[in-house]
Structures are given as structure tokens and as C-alpha cells.
Image 1 (tube, rainbow, N blue to C red):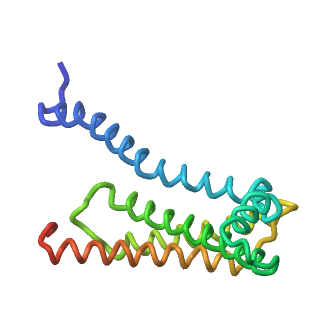
Image 2 (cartoon, rainbow, N blue to C red):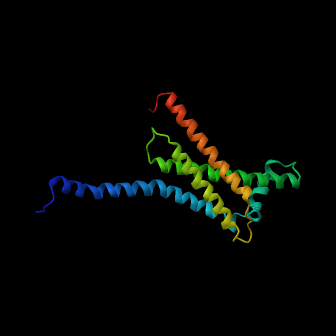
Image 3 (cartoon, rainbow, N blue to C red):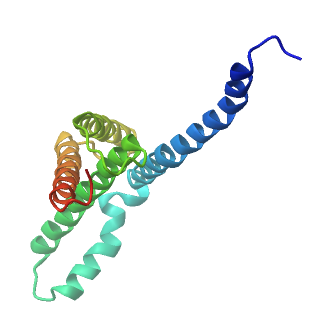
Length: 172
């Protein structure tokens, strides 16, 4: 028999379960963030360069808008790509906030929002740095700005949604 008090043995026996649950929780929430970051990194490869997406986006735009001239199609193609940048980081910002709160639905904290913005902003810069090493891609700080704006809008949406739930009395 052990010399430890019974309370310590119970605590020691319970600790691995709690630790395991914590790791599974962290893996679930932050693993989703890591998976989305992997998707963003994939979208930063040569396969998704303007030249390669041109083969898919331009015919679709010409079909949707048959009267548009080539400069209009090129401008729309650029706009589609910017919306993609915005959307990728809108989702990333939301996922980081979601991971930060780890299921605590009733809470909203400015620190979680700030963490989401810092991580998304840092990843936006890292994404553009990665593109500097891809011959068919051009790194652009303005793209990082669009990315960061997507993360900011996601945080505003989360905050507004949380306020709406509080006003309705759904959460405390």
C-alpha cells in the first residue's frame, strides 16, 4: 500500500483522464485550425496561381457574362481571387476564436478576439512569404491586408452574434 493519503491517490488516478481529455479537446479545436491552415497553404501553391485558376474562372465568367470584354473578365478574375483571400481568412479568424474558447458558448472574451487576429494576421504574412518561394506566385502585402480584413470581419461577426444571443437571453 502507498504512503500517500487516499485523496492524493484518487487525484493522481483522475489526473491522467483529465489530462487526456484536455489533449483531445485541444486536438479537436486546434487541429481544425491547423487543417484549415494547411488548406490555405495548399491554395498558395502553383496549382492555384492566377495562371492556373484562369483556366477555370475565366470560362465561367465568360459564360455568366457573355457581353464582357477581356479587360472586364480579367478584373472580375482578380476580384474573385481577392474574395477567396478574404474568405480563407474570415474562416481562419472564426476557427481560431472557436478554438480559443474551446466550447464555452456562453462566453466572449476580447483576448480570444485578439488572439484570433494575431494568429490570422501572422499567418497572412507567412502565407505571402511562402509565395515568394513559388515561381508562379507573387507575394503581396496588399493580399495580406485583404486576408487580415477577412479575419477582422469574422471577429466583428462573432462579437455581433454573441451580443444578439445575450440580448435574447439565450446566454448569460
